[in-house]
Amino acid sequence: MVNILTNITALAGAATLVNIVDFKKQVLDLSNSFAINGNPIISFPEGAGQTNQAWLLTPQATAGTFTLQSVAAPSFSVSYTGAAAGVAQHSQAVASNTLATVFKMTAVGNGTVNLIDTVTGTALTSWVNANPGNWNDPTTPITMEVLNAPPSFMQSFTVQSI
Image (cartoon, rainbow, N blue to C red):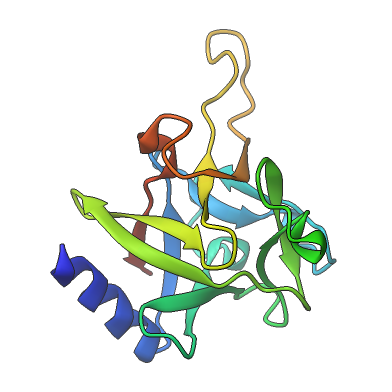
């Protein structure tokens, strides 16, 4: 598992563009590419060459910590709606140009990582489609939740270079 984190750190150091892939094989997506504070970060099917689905891992002062910077809107990073108040639990992941969340990546197996907010300890979480049998919109929310409180697979992400 150390190899996974070493590889991710190398991607960050090389300023490599990445997709953050959830358990549904969908990617973190800056909704509609809008460079607006509070614009939702969602889970959406990957589209080739979509800059709103591309991210830069920006290393922070503490080893193994990163911000997720949008390629479509470079002054924006992943944050969450309650960031200003320091309330993460159940907050929607959003774009922010002032309150970038610093994530610690923890390897969890099979090439996946948890993305954990270094301030609150909550984890980026992707959700299942409410009713895939009669709901044809693949979009699902990305929120911040207590680590391993929802089923842990919902908090497992793969970082892949693009």
